[in-house]
Length: 497
Image (tube, rainbow, N blue to C red; front, side):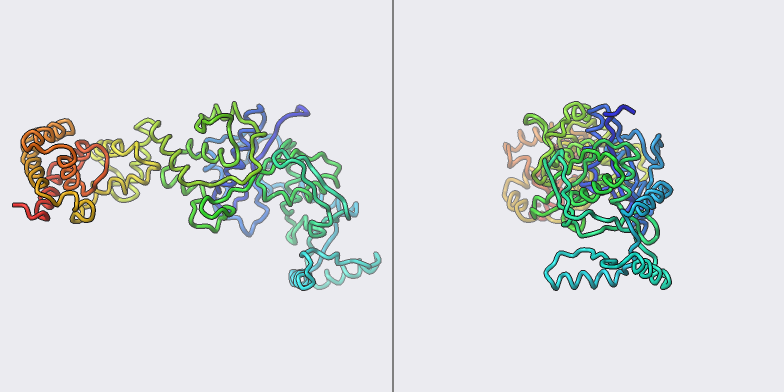
């Protein structure tokens, strides 16, 4: 491999579905790799076995593919640096942990969770930041060994802790944040690198994996900044060169101004949820990319190939990125408008089926009718699930006319228009939008009523809505018999004879 080869990775944990923030991390790494003709790698960090969920890995990979990402190495495609699941790399970690212990850079720790909790409470009472207190402080080698032997005799299993150097500054030139530094005394004391079950912790495994996989650059969320000095210590302990780090800004909610939290149910936060609602993957890719990165100029909508060509990591923002649901809907609507009718019809039809508005296996006539309906609302939809609410008049018998709609038609001219319109559509041999348009024109000529007083009573009577897509097309899809029934209901409500 060339010394300066670009190799980046996205390393999800199979503990849940693909989160917006994690998708952003994947996209930024993907674009950096593709722009620089480098390699994009997927690595599954599954050492936290208690939190792993069934199908967690499959869900992560499936949703990344839905967003349009592909990778050069990973658990599903293989590669020269595998295995690509941490749970399959224990034989790699174990000798390295032993090496640190042999060199006096790591040691067995037998403090129980109860003892550690008691320490934290005592520190809190002294107004100290919680930290690990070295359990063998002041002991001779013989005393230390005696303490270890006593713990083993009790059946206790140790964790392995890394010896943190005292009062040493760890600094790096962050690709997003600039110069960042930590004093080793501020990180909370000696930290765990292997759990009681022998599995390595994140901060150890990630260093080993990134080194062994020749990762050149690490782009990740701002919440990982505090992990970086710990990882730099491990790189230093082995004499390895660390990759370049870039920590991307937080994503905050437009409504609360606070960090986007997985517990905040007011915002849909998982890619799966947007797929289920019928968002377009190209729009989601575009929107997520703009959370903390900006292109040159005013335009915000580009193709994936254009994004790859123009991507520049120096345009990653240091300021928090605002998650704006309104902007996402606007952006997706732009993509919907530009998409071909067949793509939108297929996606929206799935939403109609899911809602029970058309059968799961529709016949040819229903499919054609549904396609016409969907095309009628295509320019209005921000995402496909909206078709069920927007077109509800086609699936539900309307209630009586009320509110502003009633105020609009409760007059002398509305019954005149409705009676004339009903009489004319009964005569039609072909009930389609073109003929219906001509009927409306004839009603205007017959009654002398025009403009709003002409078409609004027809729209309200047939659809019970004051706004909607083109009126002739809407009436065609409602159907002659239903349209006549709705008009008669409205005439009855108006008391017209």
